[in-house]
Length: 344
Image (cartoon, rainbow, N blue to C red; front, side, top):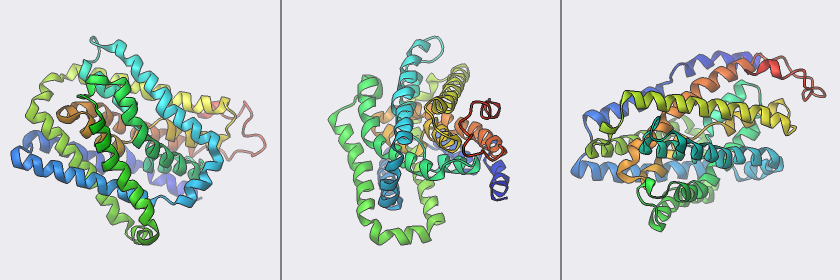
């Protein structure tokens, strides 16, 4: 009965949610009224502060005890991390073959950057819950991925993107550490005193989360408009980018589901692996892109923004279908005859 009630909330994710509309509106606002001069400096400073606050809240909300307890399921977490930071980057590198006939070099750099960012937390948990998967595992897997991404994403970007990212340096990596990791650790240290307050005001602070990302989007796309980057993107290129991302998502969804089954995971764990291992975080990727790509950040994050919307729509459909699966028999759920009919 409880799974049915969760399922009834699913249509609110389709075809787009209010946050996606807000993102689109922010891009339109940046196109019509980009921040220039002093306004750009103010927006940039506000964006930096908002992102630091965002990661402070992430650190303060993550229970250290839950994270340590989640380490017991280490095979699942290693599988998700391998999908996020190994398989995805390899597919991103393969996209170099799409240049220049399908993607421009700039769009391909953004496509590769998309493949380097960590997994999501909130939507992975939501979809895992709807599909009746292992929710605690999804919470820990998303949290571990986000924390690992603070270190690993900039390093992978420096290694794989090179000069395409606008010039990576020790200074840019230091900015990411100061802007993301230090606030996160501060949140962990202060969680004992502020954790209760954050729990009581979860809804209000959720608006802070999303508002921070909207400010980062506005700042990045304003810089792109002022620099004239958007003259490089045509409708045909956007269509080609969407097609390439659809293939990427389909490959990762199939690989995480069937690959997890081959590794011996049960149904609930496979659901958590699929939703945490096939998705990418807009919240973590945008701040990193603004530091790593500078004035070219708007074009670099376009593939991530499109992929974010696509993954929400597709995973919502999958979660809805999985929620209607019959309750598995515990001692038979790994048998070969039950699962294939639920996945296409």
